Amino acid sequence: MNIFSLLLSFLISITPSESFYCDGDPLTVVIRNNLNGDFELVTDLEKLDQGSFIVLDWKDVSLMLPISFQKNEISFTDKKWLWSYQDNERGLHQDSPRFAQRLPSGEVVEHECKLP
Image 1 (cartoon, rainbow, N blue to C red):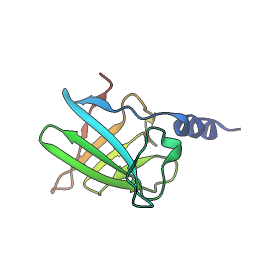
Image 2 (cartoon, rainbow, N blue to C red):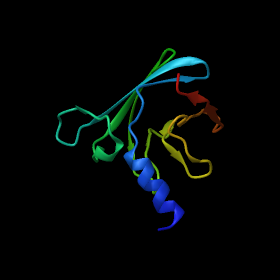
Image 3 (spheres, rainbow, N blue to C red):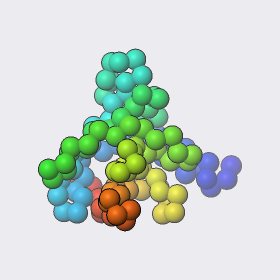
Image 4 (cartoon, rainbow, N blue to C red):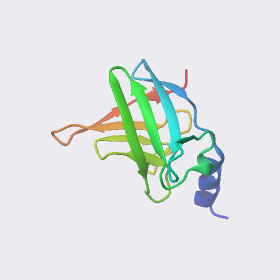
């Protein structure tokens, strides 16, 4: 088994946290499945379906981002905002997921997120 498979197995077995501090401000996370229209609350990333989405509340921003089917990562994006439990360049970050915002200029702002 190569290291990549081991990391991916660990990633799939983690449970997403419900709250973080991003750039010093509280951020709440709710993940739901909606493949069958049931809006089922997800507490285990292994149980995500094709209709999954994440709801993020942070500062004065409320976001609902659909799951993004990127190879080797679990992420949600609307192509302006990104929430990811794995960044291919930095490795696995359950305790500090990647939270990024693309500005109209094309610049990408990375918001630092940590568990409380």
